[in-house]
Length: 344
Image (cartoon, rainbow, N blue to C red):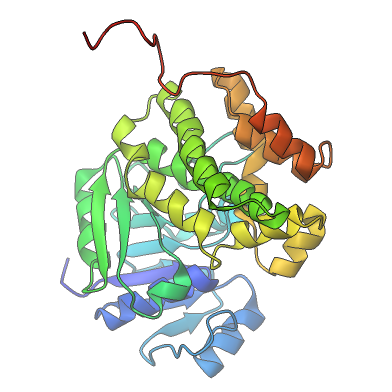
């Protein structure tokens, strides 16, 4: 494989477009596809994206409305569609994917019906053991990547060669890529941090301060890591970029659609209307059913996520939800025995 990599980007949302721009400027051959033909027409004509104002895309990016064209002959296929559309997109792409290609997923979510992560969904549809799968995840807002602001991300795969190739291809002077073999842990973090970001936004909308936001982030990663460890993931992942790193940026930045949606809900706006006002997919809402199912399956207590679901569904008012979390049974922050003279 030469230094110039042929890359097909499936999905022309903000993240797909931001990565297409970055990869093109790094010297790679990039083709962009969208299932929405009018979207490809507009982007190819204007070289801009409506949700990335002030950014002009390089002339070298090519565009197509044919999924066969974006898939065939590429070294890397980048799936950048929202999580509810990953299965359908992978199914369309499957006849045109060949062994030796690397499929990189940047969507974050868990399928409600199967409890599959995004790479598990792709594997279920592609069914080719020679195709290598990589989850690319971390604290990465498209709005900052397109401005060439310093960013870090994690290339996670069970195949070391695939992880390191993606690391090399996606690394630039402004994008630093780490590798990780804990694919499940990275994907669990990516899906569930969006729900904690909703909680953070709800607290802000209700008028809570920085103390509450810090508490939700800290106890939120505790919930995510409890579940992940029960599922067999590696503890270090939750303290890394895909874990606490992505949670911090998603739960604090106004670039975060999950945070913005949560703020509106905290102000009393119904979840459906809040999503409409945000104007883009709010992945935290999509992840809630699967998160609750995983909590039950593995017997892991996840009070913040359960409370967000109660608020979003209208079963509990926002003020009551805060009171419920604050008045839960008192506990130690440490797992296992506490005050057992272990430090004597």
